[in-house]
Amino acid sequence: MQEMIQSHLKSVSAVANICSAAMALSNYETQDTNRSELSYNLIKRIRNKTNILFFLSIFISLVFLYSCGGGGGSSSPSPTAQGGGTVAPTPPPPPPPPPPPPPPPTDSSSFETFEYQNQYGLGLINSSAAYARGATGQGMIIGVTDSGLDITHKEFSFSKVAPGSDLSYSNYTPNTDQKRHGTIVSSIAAGIKDDDGIHGVAYDAKIFFVAIQLSAPDPDYDPIDLGDDTGAGAPDYSGIDNFFDQLFDIFKSNGVGVVNNSYGWSGNINDYNETQLRNAFPKTIAAMAQAGVPDFDKTIFVWSAGNAGSYADQGADYSSPEVIPGMAYLISELQGITVAVASVDENGVISDFSNRCGASKDYCIAAPGESIRIAYPTTLSDPGIFQTTDACVMDNSCYAIGSGTSFAAPHVAGAIALLYQYFDGQLGNTEVLQRLFLTANKSGIYADNDIYGQGLMDLETATVPVGQTSIATINSLTSLIFPTSSTSIGFVKGLIGDGLSMNLNKGFIVLDELGAPFYRNLRSTSVNALPALEHLSYQYTNPSLRVHRVDRELADNTFLTLGLNQLNYGEYEAAPSLWARDEEKINYFA
Image (cartoon, one colour):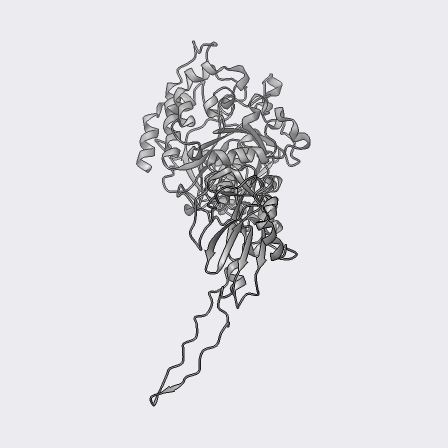
């Protein structure tokens, strides 16, 4: 893999010269009086495309019968003599299986540790609510392309970096200063959770990193030249276009589901047209569009919206994202695949330096990016903003404060990794992005979509069902819906031994109004004040109530009943339900 990446990068080594020339890529960066304000943008996530299957058990009434479990329901016979001999006692039944491990903590406050509080951005997007529901990024990979990554910083380790990552340029290894921006971005997306410093949004995820040469921000705002309205007269961008084509292919070919890009050219998207963009960057556009790849499997590209607000005194237009992050506004095939991220401060208000969502409002979201606590790489030969005598320099454990849309973007990249893991791969990457858009905070100031686009990202609302939850049948996920509000548990008689606990370990899946699946455990379902069995039987058998009953065996002497169909207005064949027998699983596609 290393050789392939080196081959890709060497084949376009001329790009480095272009990048350092007039058309150089500009790391979005601003300076802050609080030691340092940096900016770029990162992220990336590779999702395991191991089609994870869901345990789908649909029920309205679970009827528990006798002999559901062991636990002392009978006694062994006494030995008796026959023909002068003895009969050995019947061996006792095997002990019941141990109870399942307790579920992870559901109290979000237990995740609001020192590290969490130390990076306010985690709280502003309600990350702890997602953590409490089990979303940590475990098993996920976030793609990051940036200036470099220092894996010796305490927020990282060799195991944190996914195999195939390339931490060097085509002809040399980046120095400490060149590694800073990429390290900062990566720490926001997936920094280690170790009760010290900070941790990333998806702290259990890994980073697939590809280092590229980036230039420092220009002190003067210098928009990229794409020629006249037809693209005529523009410089030759074929080298850079080829470079991005090959770069993005590395992530896609390695199954990375989300890539963070905290860099770009200056120039407001409003100042360009579709023809100019297609003429200058045809391969880059095609690489991101991923024609022929199902939407479910497409890689998401996260871009920092830009820091043109820092050049307001030079007359820069920052009403919309810069040219690359804003491309989806003009290039239809990028809509739903790329996202621009604007920056807000600790109070959730748009940062002065940040580009607004503007024309790209439908493909733009807001996240924390101002005065963020970040991992800051150092060495004795290059302590940066620190002194060589500072203790943190000795063991590369320094932190600083940085600002820029570069630091807002990795919050979103990490969130995409979290949600993909949370839904067990049953939502595709494009569906996860749409869910982030639809569940973002749109109240108050965030209703101004010219500034905040889809709103302030909110991981609490993204990880709970939207609207009414329903249970569907396999024949039609849209026309045969059973509201979970009608779900209940009925008992025929008392259970023997551990029968109740064994059956309450079963689970089922409900779908919210966005089509996202949510697991429900019967153990968490209240059995108090439920309808009497006679009442349920009456409802199931009275045709005037327009109900439909489908029974399926779930386990020995345990049955699920699917009923109370809100759309049942006539008699018809019983549709097979989406049900699971023991650990058998059925895949759900949103």
